[in-house]
Structure formats: structure tokens, C-alpha cells
Image (cartoon, rainbow, N blue to C red; front, side):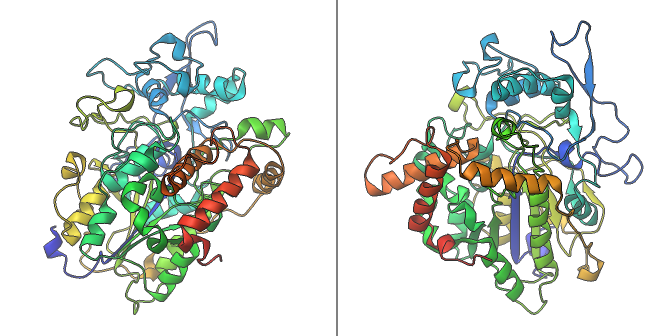
Length: 525
């Protein structure tokens, strides 16, 4: 179905909610049983395993995939950077000294496989043992390293699972790069990361040097409205800073709070394209596995539930679209919600990512040619024009959103070769008439429990300690300080790698108030 055949305004408004660091199997692998739908590339009825690394028992053994036993799983956070993902997919540690090393200490070829090696998806346990040792300064127990093969059931994540069953779920949607947050978030809007694969080594490189054209620039050129919405407690937008060379001029006008989004959705005044960032700080709504495990353990706290905040955010975003009036400029009939993740974050998945033509033939950061995709990630398309229990079996990837926007609004040629051959979402919107919201599922997050209250206790304590920020906070702070320094013609005022938590918080507040006034002055509730 072409854009010209869709003359009923079903895509007048597109909302994307992007969470953090979960694979398809980790969150949706158990979504359907073997006979519930004609085909679903999940976990039910399969005996999928990963080998236990040598030295952990006297005879060879495996860990079988299983339902997660804790809402904090995996705890601590797995490795998500390019060398870690190489080990997860190819079971390669090259050179051997990369084992039990921090990412910034790893050496070439960064665990990369030999050319044309197919990913066997057998190194997740091996890599998690190494990442655990680096994070916790000790080796894991059997129970601890086995949790990397734990995947959640629908009852544990009722909102995401309910919406996946109620609309379209993609069981072959891959992120663009086998690495971490920044490079994949950059590809989502630019089909490029300017050759970078790591977040903040060194700090500030994205906010200073990632000058790839974005789909936001294309929207602006044809006067299509767009906005980025963040939690005001985060102060600064990761999307904005990742693309600062291209988007800085729009920081004051196009970056707002999540509460502005709720208001605009209710009154029917959403922009043509809305992108929502969850809170990557405390209290987290991003579904990111907990990356402060060492501090939690040091303070004698149990690990927090890392999914319930994201489930609540998703339910709120979905409900405000579902209940929007059909009389508004934006409404339930003409607004599509894409729910996705930036990357898999080191969590288990069994489907090998495909190879793609090299985007950087001479090799970018850490020698990567960008010639293979990242791991499968959960992605849903929620729209009145989608049937319930739809499973999209074709291969999609994150730049499919760019392709869809270009096709629907005639935004010009491809940004790069990557979005040029990405499939569009338009054929998935296949209904002849819209489903009324009274036929849409109603979803309710799990009630707050002990683990969530313990996370709040953890937050109160960590705010009063001279403790380091979490890894992603330090990366984002590095880009925020680099952007501020460049704008003011001086060096950054602090080293993002050494600041303590309270100092980092003050820097975020200052930079946010200065460069993201729409967030600082936007709706707070």
C-alpha cells in the first residue's frame, strides 16, 4: 500500500516512545504460546541454551532460557558496548586480555569476529560473567550468571504485553548497530552516527562532532511540526545533545516536558512527529537494567524493579492517545504510536542479526564498518488501523521510521544508504476502517510494591552521598558540559568522569535551564 493510496489521514501524527536496553526475547519472548498465532519467533516450547564458560564447573554445561525470577533481572547491568556485544553474538574474546577488562581498557580487534562469521548467539553467559566481575569486583554465583538467560512473562509486564497482543508486534525488528545507546539513538533519527559506536569515550564527542543530517531537519524544511518530550527531572535531552551540531538552534523551541505532551494530546494539538524520551535519571522510567548495583549492595539494599516505571509511562502515553477526542487536530484516528527500544543492552536474544552493506567501508570507531545490524528489540505499532494480535514477520529495523516519515510526507531522498532500503511501516496500517477505542485493550501497570519503595529509599540515600552517577548519566553529562563549553568558548567546567552525584545534579540543572528552557519552564505535572 503506497502513501498515495492512504488518503484517510491515518498517519497525520506519529508518536515514538523509545525505551532503553532490552532485547525482544527478554521482554516479549513469552508473549505467545506455540499455537496461539500462526507464527511467532519467541521462546515458548523451545529449549534454548548458552554454554557456561570454562572453569565454572568440572564438566561442560549450559544455562537454559527461563522465565525471569526477579523484576530486577538482570542485576547488575550487562555489557552493552561494541566489544561486549561481539562476545555475546560470536563468543569471541580477542585479545584474551579483554576478558575481565573495562571497555576503555579493551584492545583491538575489540572481540570482533573473523569476516563473514555468522552470529551463533552463544556468548551471553560468557560475556555476563566478565561484565559481572568488572562491575562487582567478584565472580558471580551460578544463580547470578544464569539470570542473563531469564526472560519476562506477560504477567510480569502487563502493559507492554497487553499492547503487543492488542496491536502489531514485530518479531524481527533489529536495532541498527551492535552497540550501545548513543549510536543507536543517532541512527534512529539520522541513519548514521558519524562513525561512532561508543557513548562517551572520550566525553562530548557526539554533542561536538556528530553532524549527520537528521529527519528533524527534513521535517523542518517542509514545515512539518515536531517536538521532543522529556521528563523535567532529567533537565537535558539525550536526543538534543546527541544531535547538537544539527539541532542546537531548536533546543529553545522544540524540546518540552512529558507533561506538555499529555496536555497537547488531550487537547488534540500534537505535532506531526513527537518523540518521547523516558527518564534516564532517577526515578527511572526507561526500563534500563539497574547500573548502580555495587552501590545498592554497599548500602545493603535489595535491587530495584527496573520495569514498573517504564510500564507506567507507557500506559500513560497510550491512554492519553486512546482517550483523545476525535474532534481534535490530533486524535485516536490519525495518531500512530510506535513503542520501541534503542538497543538490547546485553540481554539475551536467540535470533541472529542480519548482515547489511557496509556504511563505513574504511571502518569507524573501533574499526567497525557498520556492516551488520544490532540485536532484536521489542517494537510495537499501535494504531486504529492495525488489527489485534498482529505479528509482523518481515525484517524491520530502526531506520524504518525514517523511511516511513520520508515516504508519508515526501521528505526527500534517503539520509544514508541505511534508511534507503529499510522497509516502511505503511503496509502494516492495513485495516480498511479504524478500530474504535472501545475495542482497544485497557492496560493497568502492576501496583507499586516493596522493590519500588526500596528504590525510592535508595534514591534518597544516593542523593546525600558523594557517590558517582550511573554510567549513562556520566555520558550524558559529558555531552552537556562539552556543549556548554563550546557555546561559551571555553573548556568544560568539570570532568564528567570524576564528578560526584550532587555536583553532577547541579551541572545538569544549570545546563538544562540555559539551553533547554522549554523543559525548565514547561509543565511539571
